[in-house]
Image (cartoon, rainbow, N blue to C red; front, side, top):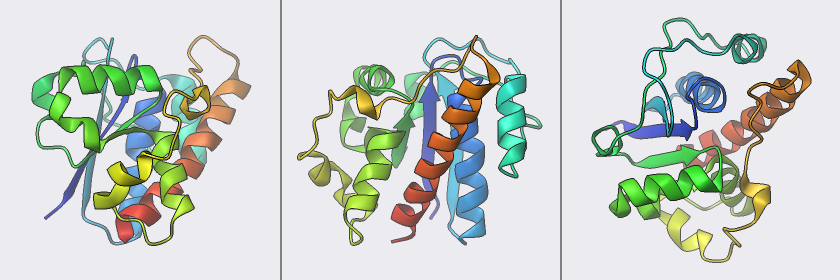
Length: 173
Protein backbone atom coordinates (compact mmCIF):
# COMPACT_ATOMS: atom_id res chain seq x y z
CA UNK A 1 0.00 0.00 0.00
CA UNK A 2 1.39 3.37 -1.03
CA UNK A 3 2.45 6.00 1.49
CA UNK A 4 0.37 9.13 0.86
CA UNK A 5 2.25 12.41 1.32
CA UNK A 6 1.15 16.01 0.82
CA UNK A 7 3.50 19.00 0.68
CA UNK A 8 2.07 22.36 1.74
CA UNK A 9 3.19 25.97 1.38
CA UNK A 10 1.38 29.26 0.79
CA UNK A 11 0.74 29.70 -2.94
CA UNK A 12 1.62 26.17 -4.09
CA UNK A 13 3.93 27.58 -6.76
CA UNK A 14 7.41 27.35 -5.20
CA UNK A 15 8.27 25.35 -2.09
CA UNK A 16 5.56 22.68 -2.02
CA UNK A 17 5.74 21.83 -5.75
CA UNK A 18 9.51 21.51 -5.43
CA UNK A 19 9.12 19.20 -2.44
CA UNK A 20 6.35 17.24 -4.20
CA UNK A 21 8.27 16.62 -7.40
CA UNK A 22 11.62 15.87 -5.70
CA UNK A 23 10.05 13.49 -3.18
CA UNK A 24 8.09 11.64 -5.87
CA UNK A 25 11.17 11.23 -8.08
CA UNK A 26 13.58 10.24 -5.31
CA UNK A 27 11.13 7.86 -3.65
CA UNK A 28 10.60 6.15 -7.01
CA UNK A 29 14.39 5.91 -7.51
CA UNK A 30 14.60 4.25 -4.08
CA UNK A 31 11.89 1.77 -5.05
CA UNK A 32 9.38 3.15 -2.55
CA UNK A 33 5.65 3.13 -3.13
CA UNK A 34 4.93 6.79 -2.33
CA UNK A 35 2.20 9.00 -3.78
CA UNK A 36 2.95 12.71 -3.41
CA UNK A 37 1.01 15.84 -4.23
CA UNK A 38 0.81 19.37 -2.90
CA UNK A 39 -1.45 22.30 -2.09
CA UNK A 40 -1.25 25.82 -0.70
CA UNK A 41 -2.92 27.56 2.20
CA UNK A 42 -3.62 30.61 0.01
CA UNK A 43 -3.27 29.09 -3.45
CA UNK A 44 -5.22 30.00 -6.53
CA UNK A 45 -6.23 26.83 -8.35
CA UNK A 46 -4.55 26.11 -11.67
CA UNK A 47 -1.41 28.27 -11.54
CA UNK A 48 1.77 26.85 -13.10
CA UNK A 49 4.90 26.24 -11.10
CA UNK A 50 6.93 29.46 -10.68
CA UNK A 51 9.53 29.86 -13.46
CA UNK A 52 12.42 30.13 -10.97
CA UNK A 53 11.20 27.05 -9.10
CA UNK A 54 11.00 25.22 -12.43
CA UNK A 55 14.63 26.21 -13.12
CA UNK A 56 15.75 24.97 -9.70
CA UNK A 57 13.70 21.78 -9.99
CA UNK A 58 15.15 20.99 -13.41
CA UNK A 59 18.62 21.56 -11.97
CA UNK A 60 17.90 18.68 -9.59
CA UNK A 61 16.66 16.52 -12.46
CA UNK A 62 12.95 17.07 -11.81
CA UNK A 63 10.16 18.35 -14.01
CA UNK A 64 7.44 20.91 -13.46
CA UNK A 65 5.46 19.73 -16.46
CA UNK A 66 1.74 19.35 -15.87
CA UNK A 67 1.84 21.05 -12.48
CA UNK A 68 -1.16 23.15 -11.40
CA UNK A 69 -1.54 24.77 -8.00
CA UNK A 70 -4.52 24.12 -5.76
CA UNK A 71 -5.98 25.39 -2.54
CA UNK A 72 -5.72 23.03 0.43
CA UNK A 73 -8.92 21.64 1.89
CA UNK A 74 -9.93 19.06 4.49
CA UNK A 75 -10.90 16.75 1.61
CA UNK A 76 -7.39 16.91 0.12
CA UNK A 77 -5.87 16.12 3.52
CA UNK A 78 -8.02 13.07 4.17
CA UNK A 79 -6.13 9.78 4.42
CA UNK A 80 -2.61 11.23 4.44
CA UNK A 81 0.21 9.29 6.04
CA UNK A 82 2.47 12.35 6.15
CA UNK A 83 2.00 16.08 5.58
CA UNK A 84 5.16 18.11 5.02
CA UNK A 85 4.85 21.87 5.34
CA UNK A 86 7.22 24.66 4.39
CA UNK A 87 6.80 26.51 7.70
CA UNK A 88 5.45 26.24 11.21
CA UNK A 89 2.54 28.49 10.19
CA UNK A 90 1.59 26.06 7.42
CA UNK A 91 1.91 23.17 9.87
CA UNK A 92 -0.43 24.98 12.27
CA UNK A 93 -2.92 25.73 9.47
CA UNK A 94 -3.02 22.05 8.47
CA UNK A 95 -3.46 20.95 12.07
CA UNK A 96 -6.30 23.43 12.52
CA UNK A 97 -8.00 22.28 9.31
CA UNK A 98 -7.51 18.57 10.06
CA UNK A 99 -6.86 18.14 13.81
CA UNK A 100 -6.59 14.36 13.56
CA UNK A 101 -3.48 14.79 11.39
CA UNK A 102 -1.42 16.49 14.12
CA UNK A 103 0.71 13.36 14.58
CA UNK A 104 1.37 13.19 10.84
CA UNK A 105 2.10 16.86 10.11
CA UNK A 106 5.64 18.30 10.26
CA UNK A 107 7.63 21.00 8.61
CA UNK A 108 9.90 19.55 5.95
CA UNK A 109 12.91 20.50 8.06
CA UNK A 110 11.48 18.94 11.24
CA UNK A 111 10.85 15.62 9.50
CA UNK A 112 14.32 15.66 7.92
CA UNK A 113 16.00 16.50 11.23
CA UNK A 114 14.13 13.77 13.09
CA UNK A 115 14.94 11.22 10.40
CA UNK A 116 18.62 12.13 10.48
CA UNK A 117 18.83 12.17 14.28
CA UNK A 118 17.86 8.51 14.69
CA UNK A 119 18.81 5.94 12.05
CA UNK A 120 16.21 3.52 13.46
CA UNK A 121 13.30 5.99 13.41
CA UNK A 122 10.36 5.05 11.21
CA UNK A 123 7.38 7.06 10.04
CA UNK A 124 5.34 5.55 12.87
CA UNK A 125 7.77 6.91 15.45
CA UNK A 126 7.92 10.51 14.23
CA UNK A 127 5.29 11.87 16.64
CA UNK A 128 7.10 10.48 19.68
CA UNK A 129 10.48 11.73 18.41
CA UNK A 130 9.06 15.24 17.96
CA UNK A 131 8.42 15.50 21.70
CA UNK A 132 12.05 16.47 22.22
CA UNK A 133 11.96 19.31 19.69
CA UNK A 134 11.26 22.98 20.19
CA UNK A 135 8.57 23.09 17.51
CA UNK A 136 8.35 26.88 17.80
CA UNK A 137 11.94 27.33 16.59
CA UNK A 138 12.02 29.48 13.40
CA UNK A 139 14.84 27.25 12.14
CA UNK A 140 12.16 24.75 11.05
CA UNK A 141 10.86 27.18 8.40
CA UNK A 142 11.93 27.09 4.76
CA UNK A 143 12.35 30.65 3.47
CA UNK A 144 9.73 31.88 0.99
CA UNK A 145 11.47 32.81 -2.27
CA UNK A 146 8.48 34.44 -3.98
CA UNK A 147 9.30 37.91 -5.28
CA UNK A 148 12.97 37.47 -4.40
CA UNK A 149 16.14 37.14 -6.46
CA UNK A 150 17.16 33.83 -8.10
CA UNK A 151 19.74 33.17 -5.36
CA UNK A 152 16.93 32.81 -2.81
CA UNK A 153 15.25 30.20 -5.04
CA UNK A 154 18.60 28.40 -5.26
CA UNK A 155 19.07 28.47 -1.48
CA UNK A 156 15.50 27.30 -0.86
CA UNK A 157 15.93 24.57 -3.45
CA UNK A 158 19.11 23.28 -1.82
CA UNK A 159 17.46 23.27 1.59
CA UNK A 160 14.42 21.35 0.33
CA UNK A 161 16.53 18.94 -1.74
CA UNK A 162 18.69 18.02 1.24
CA UNK A 163 15.62 17.59 3.44
CA UNK A 164 13.91 15.38 0.86
CA UNK A 165 16.94 13.07 0.79
CA UNK A 166 16.60 12.65 4.57
CA UNK A 167 12.85 12.06 4.31
CA UNK A 168 13.32 9.39 1.63
CA UNK A 169 15.74 7.57 3.95
CA UNK A 170 13.14 7.83 6.73
CA UNK A 171 10.37 6.45 4.51
CA UNK A 172 12.60 3.58 3.39
CA UNK A 173 12.90 2.23 6.94
